[in-house]
Structures are given as C-alpha cells and as structure tokens.
Length: 279
Length: 319
Image (cartoon, chains in turn red, purple):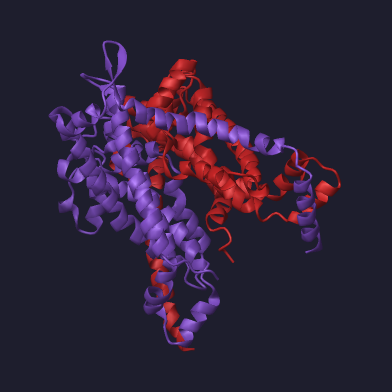
C-alpha cells in the first residue's frame, strides 16, 4: 500500500525526465524533416510549425534531385556497406569459430592480437593506408573502402561472435564429426545457423559506422564516381550554404534511410547491446 | 557428460597417434588475419615508422625524432598542436562531465521497475547515435544559426532570449557548444550500456536491500552504483578513445580550419590539415604521421591506464 502511494509521484517524475530528454533527442530531426517540406517564407516565418497548405513546397527536393547525383551516391554507399558487411560477417565468423572451437598453440595470443583493433582506431594508420592504396592503384575505387572497412569491422565482430560460438553445444558438433561431416560443413551447416541472431547484432554494429563514415571516403575515394552518400551530402551542403530549402531537403534525404533501417532493426540492436541482460 | 568424456579420450588417442596438421584451423583464420594485418596493423606501424622520416629532395631520409621536435618546439607547429591538444582535453572533460552522468541518469530511470513505455524511450533516445555526423553537425549548425532564429525563438519561451549569442561563431563558446552537440549525439551509448548493467543485477540483491530498508536514492547510491562501476569504466575508456580520435563533427560543422580562429581545432582536424594541407600550407605526410603517432600514444596510454589500473581494481561481481 505504502509503496503504491510512494511510487506514483516517482513514476511521474521518471516519465517527465524521460519525455523531456526524448523531446531533446528528437527535436532537431523533426525540425529538419518538417521544414524540408516548406517554402522559403515558411521556413523562416514559422520554423516551429508543421507545413500548412500555404507553406507546403517541394522546391528543396526538386533542387536536390536536379543538382546532386544522390541516387548514384546512395548506390555507392549501399555497395560499400553491403560488401564490407558480408566480408566482416564471413571472415569474422570463421575466425571466431577457429578461436573458440580449436585449441592450438598461440590461440590466446591470436585472440589478443585480433582484439587490439577494438581499442586502437584504424584512422591512425591513414597516412600509410593512403600510400598503400596509391601503390596498388586502388585510390578512388570502392574496393579500397571495402577493404578498409572490413579490417575496421573485424576485431569487434570476432570478439562478439566468439563469445556466442562458445555457447554452441559441443555435443552437436561432435555428433556431426561422428557422422563424418568435415569441419567446414560443421561450421557452415551446424554452427552458422545457430549463431544467426548474434550475426544480426554484429551486422547492425558494423553497418552504422560504415554508412556514416566521412573520413575514408574523403581521403581514399573522393572522386565523383565513388562518392558515398555521406560525402556527397557533405559537399552538397557546402555548396548550397544559402539555399535553405535544398539543404533541409538534402538533410532529410540523408536522415530517412538510416531512420527507417533503425526503426526496423532497433529491437535487434538494443537486444544486442543489452544481450543476456533483458529479462 | 558421457560424450564429453568420450571426446576427451578420442582427443587423447589422436594426440598419441601424432595428429596431422589441422589445415582447417588455418583456413578459418587466414582471411580475417590477412585483411586485418594488411589494412590495419601494418599501416599503423607504417605510420609510426613514417613519423621518423622526412622528405628531403624527393627521398625519404631518416631523421630520428626531429619531426616531433618540430611539432613540440617550432612555433609554426607547436602553437597549433598544443591548442589542439588542450581543446581535445576540454572536449573529453565535457563528455565525461555531461554525457556519462546524463546517460547513467536516463538508464537508472529506464530500469526502474514497472515503468511503462521504456521501449519507446530507449528507441527514441538512441536515434541521434545512428545519424551521421554530417547530418548532426549541419542540423545543429542550422538550429544555432542566428539567421534562422530557432534557438532564440525557443529560448524566448523560457524567458532566456537575452542569453542567446551565435555560439558556434564565438571563439570562447564554439568548442563547448560543439562538445555538447557531440554529447547529444552519443548519450545513447552510455545509456544503453549502463541500462544493460542495471538489468543484470539480480532481483535477490535488490530484494535483500529492500528488506534492510534501503530503497529509492539510497538504494541506487549504495547498492546499484558499486555494482555498475565496471560498466562505467568501460564507457569512460570508450569515450576517451572516441574523443581523441574525433574529427567528423568538427569538420562538418566548422570545416578543416576548425574556426573561428582554430578555437574548435582538435587532434583529428589538426592531423587532417597537416596531412593534406589547406589553403597556403602544403600537405606533409611525415608531419601527419608524427601527429598520428602522438594520438596513438595518447590513446594507448589511456587504454593501458584502464586495463592495468582501473579494470584490475574494480571488483567484478559474478552472479
């Protein structure tokens, strides 16, 4: 009884703080998307009101689609992200399986070596990476980005996946061995399907920084053919400093795909971060 | 149990019979190790090595620590370097003082029992973290811009309009303002990690505390906080590494020159300018490598402090 009366104001207080912070977190996003559908007068006259029939205008979007080749940039981002993700998951799962399944000399050392990259950012090697790409002729190709992002994503992927691989039952794998399956078949047919949920978690973790990265596209692949959507948006925003319609429309176009993906996968992502804890 | 025993026996028998080389272990490891070594470890060491050389008459000459002497001593470089380092430290302090306490507060509220809509709050508060720096930097630049007037308009609601100044344009405020934007973006990460730690505290511990009359705030400070200290250690080191490696937000909001008058220059933007050059200065890979080396040493020092001093002293509770 007494706890019930005491917890009501506390719950209200908690909701008040959380709602306030939610508003702070979402306000800029809503503001940008809302104003991108307005005419110039509407943007400056009443920035905080949703578009009305009087202020509704798509001029920003027509400018963006007329000027920047956003569809192409989007395609580049998609190719780079999907390919890097594929290699991170495949190579990462293979290495995680080797580390968690087999005992061999140097196992722990190998694990530590591969975990180094979690703490030391790959960005610090940029000077030498650029030299390497120039030497191999990979500058301004998407391959350069895919290779770098694969290396960047591997350490965390291996670390997380080997934790999950350890939980796969030994009996199952040994049963497979007794039935004469090769180690490769055991990995691809038995283990991989079982760790699929954790693969999804790793995928989300790997995907966000790759999609959002500005540093490597700026340095390794700034050409028109290989621009990613993040770099394209950055340059576009720089060009159209005074065209607010176009800027807001470009920002909205950059926000929406990420937001849609996030809403679809947020459950997966949050479950991954809080894995094992959510009861 | 029986199968385990059998497996051990089998393995023992195998060892005695001189096991053939297990090629599949190599095959499983090779792709990851190769890509990781070629594009991460070797370039990292390549960069460290490059910092000891200088390009003299079209050829790389070994100059020892001379690049570092230039960086620390030559006024052309050292003024900017110390400025960037100071700014970076301030950037980190703001994150530690603002981002992590807010994250812990939100997580503590979210984890309170029988609270509804937690999934919605969690999802919404994490949204800024998944957005790209380009979006975040530009959106805030627009909001804080005096031309658009959204910020003064909002401050007018609470009667603070007279306090508005174009923060991003003033030397004394720009860095703090940008740090707070970065805090806004990343508050979701400490929130999630602490939230997970709080949820993993077993109910028995909480019930025992309640039996002893420890509830509410006292329960948080005396029971829960000590139990989540390892997670606070982890978010601190993540913040440290992230901050001393930051670049994108400053670059998108203020450009490579980190204006006004270098007041928002941090090590990442300084590295970019040194490496690629800007306006009148020509890019210098060797000096860039020297700056990257310093950043590497700073991050390595932070990670070592964490691993050897913080982590070993924090007691981990196994439930």
